[in-house]
Image 1 (spheres, one colour):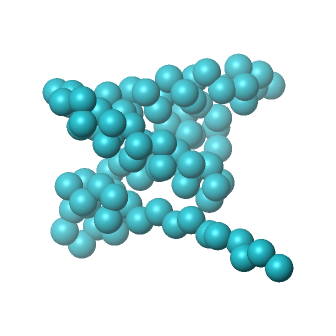
Image 2 (cartoon, rainbow, N blue to C red; image 1 turned 120 degrees about the horizontal axis):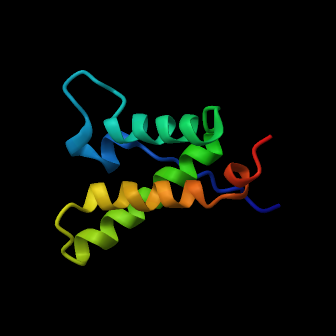
Image 3 (cartoon, helix red, strand yellow; image 1 turned 30 degrees about the horizontal axis):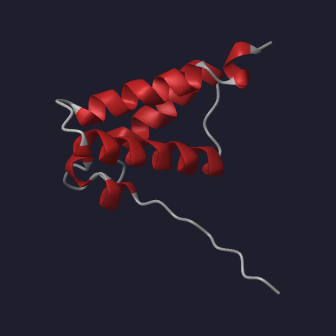
Length: 93
């Protein structure tokens, strides 16, 4: 049978500049959770957090390659726009 590939994400490895000494959770990780709470009034699931983290990482790399002035800030702006355009946000009871 086929093996299931499990993808993991490590905020300390992916966003090393955001991890403070002795602080295992990066500010970027906290911002993902906070944005989710504001938009959906709940915490993201593990899969949602992983997808959001991967999206931010890809955006960050792309913006850095393009020479953006503040790539992390722009990546977070793009992430928030995605959240606000989701069906879950638009159709909250």
